[in-house]
Length: 244
Ligand code: GLP
Image (tube, rainbow, N blue to C red):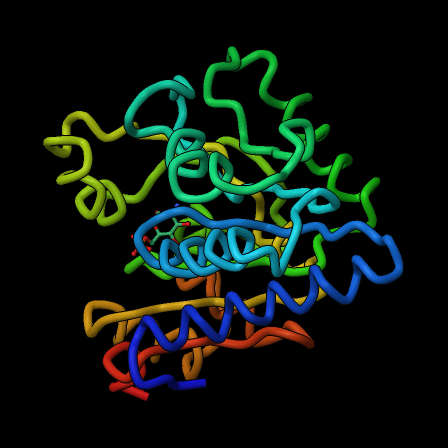
């Protein structure tokens, strides 16, 4: 779906999330959201905060699982995705703290395997992800599933691609400060979501959007796996759709 601009597209996505929350609230069912970081989803979060402030939606019955976190990373660091999510969303809504899940970048390597497995189990025990939000990296990564990630991969520690680290360099005041690793949900974790919305804005994403939508399904562009999902939409602005 190609929208006039990122703002209109974000409003559309925020409305879909809000209507899911409202529908489930009627039957007192909980909602499980898979959330993304980066510059792409920030306007969606702004709208959700706005809807909440206007009294249109409550997050009291919403559970969230974030896609990824740099490793190692302290939650109080200015670069942490914990801080990002608090600033953009969680500090402004009524979600119970215990409903929020973001991969823990402080764990020791020895504890990571069990932790990642438990992350998967928590999602499954809550009935799976109802709606997964995604951005996309220039490498075709979703979450931090870089080229080479398999279709069935699960939550795990990964090594970041050079291109991804270059793209993050300005946030970290230099490429040398960007962590070389991250914890990410796997492609398989993402593909298990009942509904997926991938968003992309700007001409810098046009090529990877074309490869993801029209290209052959392959591990070297992990977003191509989404072509096989039964309920996945790409929500784009005109610039990111310009090569389709
Ligand atoms: C990071 C995140 C991804 C995100 C991507 C794109 O690498 N881990 O989840 O989709 O960046 O970032 P941006 O939205 O800033 O373009």
